[in-house]
Image 1: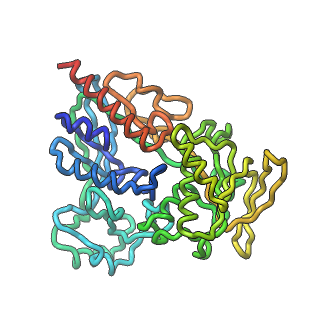
Image 2: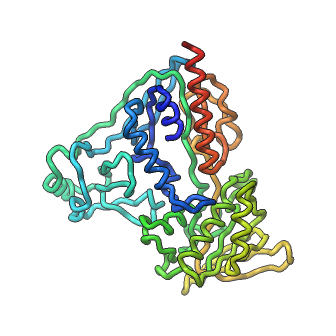
Image 3: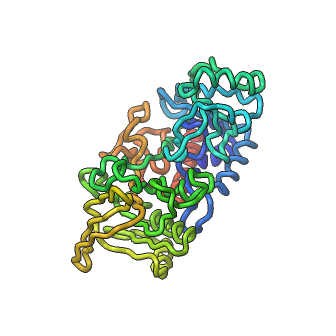
Length: 403
């Protein structure tokens, strides 16, 4: 979004391609930014207003780039657009979905709840248009939709569309996904009900999340009063992610503050290899250390088990500073999973260079194609937006050199 706006606001036409049904990626799923602890919806709303008012930006959601050909100054891109089944010609609201029984897993909340088959992705969704999950929709609900929705609002026969566009430069801002915690057998994700990941914690804390902003245990809905954060869950590990994802320490410190703000009696323990908070972020870390209900233990968690009756969790870990072997119980555990580039799974349809982890190597080795944010390296929101501005400038310079 930043790269698109930077280019469009100095006079260039931009095509913004987004694979989800809404703009904002994973950032808009966060509860708060560090270190200011403000919601991402604030900056997101400003950017969506800028996009809405700028006629030089064309937005395609539910879309992917299937092919890129050509060279700097004259690329051709084939864009495949999945059907939304909602035309956008009429406004819809939740009253039109109340009678539906068909449900789908809510991927916006990382699968922790469900939505109706006809749904608005989230409260701040842009474009602010409902989506229909055709595969989840029953025949009975298809009939109900035709009865309650305005004529022409829903098109159950909408087809996939493919378009081809000509562009002078390409910015790759394909983002990231969290490392699959199910691969960490010893840490209990998927086996122990009250083991969640850091991205799931963001949605638990959010008012629009599955619990209305209450940080509770998935097993029984009780307020989490004794929470452990397990750092480097899969990261800095040759069997999983050998690299540091740069943001996980700050993410857990931020989430520890969520827990303490929402339950003043709660206790938090952070198990870490190293606490990495660079530059001005170091202050945030030291402020958290002043909270007597927050403690940090230097040691890598070796195993997590579950009490079959209470669903409490037992962590086995060696405190490397004291050399004590700990066997401690907690209500809930949050795994700080690392950043994996989306290009590790789906490559850009052009001959680009990648490093051994799937990140685009450097700015790309092709003139006219520029990578930004987590497509290049793990980074936080602030660094990603600065990087996107730089990518937009490179794209503009590329085009100007060809005039």
